Image 1 (cartoon, rainbow, N blue to C red):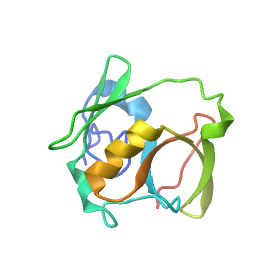
Image 2 (image 1 turned 45 degrees about the vertical axis):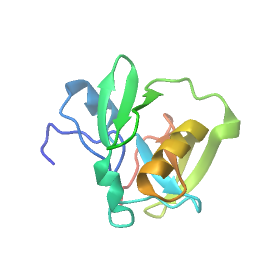
Image 3 (image 1 turned 60 degrees about the horizontal axis):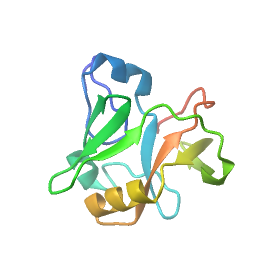
Image 4 (image 1 turned 90 degrees about the horizontal axis):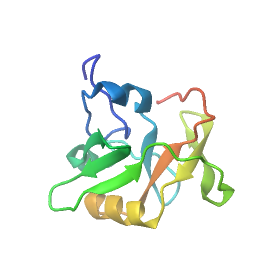
Length: 127
């Protein structure tokens, strides 16, 4: 990936949109066990293309309607806040909900969820 390509959803497609820099790797896909899904574990993630449009993260995949997820939401609902282990680091994440989970599960063929790294998390060690 080049220096001007950004990956808003870790392990999914990338975009060269300049405003995507602020959202680089802010979302990820996890399985039912809370494990981060990489392309090595789930090659179909590579089929997901991403772009930013009118305040939304727009996900597209072959044979699927697009999925729009709001970019900037005030994360004040603790009922959708979780912690996952990522590279030996506990990371606070926000579940993007049932619709996003159904969408990504249909793309990958396995039960998954779309999670957003909580805005208070300063740095994530992606390993």
